[in-house]
Amino acid sequence: MAVSLRGLALRKKAEQRSHLLRRYQVAAIGGLLAIALGIAGLEFSMGRLLVQASYDLPFRWRPNLDPHGVTIVYLDAASAQKLNQPVEDVWSRALHVPLLDA
Image 1 (cartoon, rainbow, N blue to C red):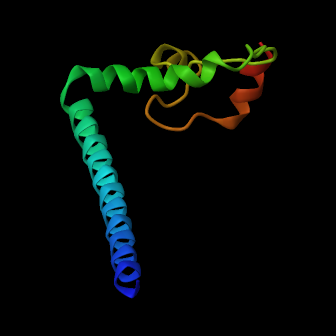
Image 2 (image 1 turned 180 degrees about the horizontal axis):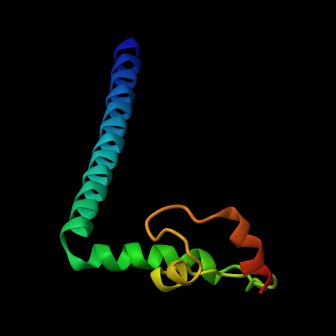
């Protein structure tokens, strides 16, 4: 009777080890697959499409925002000459408010 209990305990322990080893194998395969897909995404054009889609996806599930009160001021070279401002340097802050009020 003692021999059969000992054999049963050894068999159970071996099954646990086998199960644990299988879990590690599955985890390793999953990790390698993730690495391979990441490298493939960097090397092939599929990766570029996924990157571009990742910028658009967050905006698909949010409502459209009303851009009321938003003003865009484009500071170009022609405007700099007309307003006597440096082209490659910071413009005078005194000009910002009148530009936004216009």
